[in-house]
Each structure stands twice: as structure tokens, then as C-alpha cells.
Image (cartoon, rainbow, N blue to C red; front, side):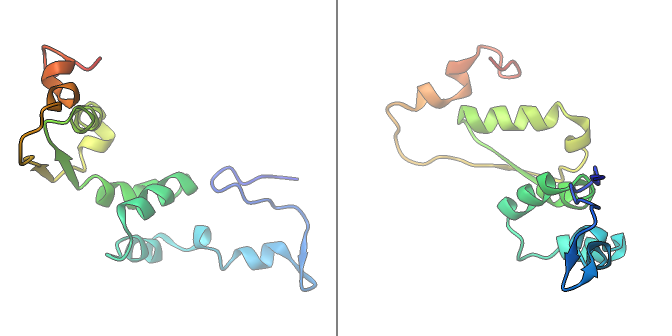
Length: 129
């Protein structure tokens, strides 16, 4: 049994309705030409969650989804947002896709906000614990 390392599809001799499984692979998403995958993954109906799942599904998909997935990056005073931003910024393969940086300003008074912000997590905002 041979496994396709790109998408985990087995080439084992299986039958579906009396036909060889290889005949049915032709119609799978993984086997579509790049010219067809690009508009499919560019569809605005796909959410960030969908794109993240597609990115992890098959080694062939990330080049089609990372541009859209990392096109806009949000950041706020919340430590988790800052950590995500610095992780993306420190990865050249992801950072090159960022086109928009959105600052989220939090409204109201938050008595316990200090425990969630970068200022309380590190003295140097570029250094993550």
C-alpha cells in the first residue's frame, strides 16, 4: 500500500461500484489544477476557521490560503493578541502576506486588565515569555 504524502490518500487497490479507486481520485479537491484551486480558496464565503482547516488538511493547500489567512492581522493590548502578532512577525513566510494591521481599542474600565496585557507580561514589549 502506497500513501500519497501530499494528502494522505491511499493508492491501494480498492473498488467503488466495481471501479478502481484511482479512477475516482481524479475528481477530488486535492487533484484539481492550481488554476481551479485559487478561485475556490479565494471565495469570500470561507471563514478564517475554514482557511485554517484547509491549511492543515493537505500539504498542497497552504500556498493557496496563507495569503488570505494572514492578509489582516489584529492586535490589541491583550497579551494573546500581542503574542500572535510577534509570532507572525518573526516568521518571514507568514509576515510577507500581511497587508493590514488592525489595532483593537478596548472600551470601558477593566479592573483586571493588567493581568492580560503585554505591559504586565514583559518589560520589553518585543520579548515574549
